[in-house]
Length: 284
Image 1 (tube, rainbow, N blue to C red):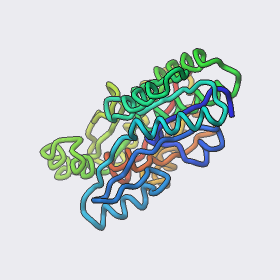
Image 2 (image 1 turned 45 degrees about the horizontal axis):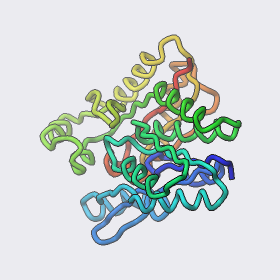
Image 3 (image 1 turned 135 degrees about the vertical axis):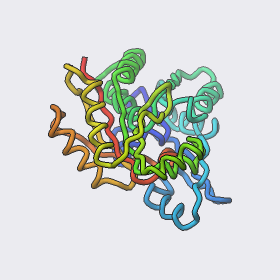
């Protein structure tokens, strides 16, 4: 193990196969169906989650990892030879993960643990986690890795299209009045990250136009800069995500390699099935 360990929560939308390969520890969000508690990613994925939602007609609730869960992950990293830890959590605006990690760091007195609120969600957070792992693998110090991570966060953008506001309304993230009107008019919401949380940016009338608008928003934000890194995100809609990728490639200069990631259930239950979007880092 590197002398600097990377810890995150599962809201970063990074698959276990990738994080295990890069030595990143993920502390799971808890998905709660009635009396049943399931660990995000480890016990349930988004496909299984929405299969149950459709059967039961209601969303599960979610719970941030406890300080004890973070403390256990920190202790395991130190026991495995780490000398310090960089912990990157989902935005404190949408989850108690950050406060839980800060509390956990105080439980291991005398240990070098740096906890960062990424002020982002899903792969916006994930891009920062990957950047941290890559920086440390390249020999960066803890302070250097923190600086790199914060810089990546400032240059990361996210735009996503939803086929419906149904699930956002069920989760209480938008008013039922707004969701009802949107459903009546077949409005397709566009989301972005603003002030540390997913925010409803625009309402578009058709799916085709919503995808086109996502591409326009990307082009506007990029301007004359290059795209340093780009990835597609989705919730049980991989084929649609690939179609959006093709549209992006037809309209702008994109990196040769664009990975596709699925939102993990901890966040996906708040957006709903069918979400597709793009996350990218604007070059300097």
